[in-house]
Image (tube, rainbow, N blue to C red; front, side):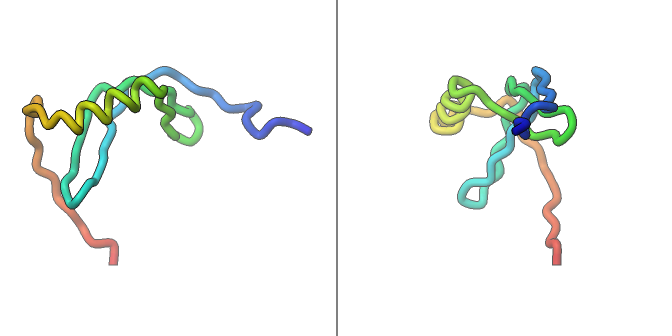
Length: 74
């Protein structure tokens, strides 16, 4: 039986990670990830996930602020 992951092609990239928590949007730029070139799915190492959690828990001052529009799908 062939593996469903046989043709999976992952490349190392720096991505933007977003998280919506308690109505607040958090954005972390330049996060290392392995990205599937066909689907765009992002995979993070356990160390990267731990660092993301620390960054968001520390509540240190952000590098910058952005404004973004929010739309309803319906």
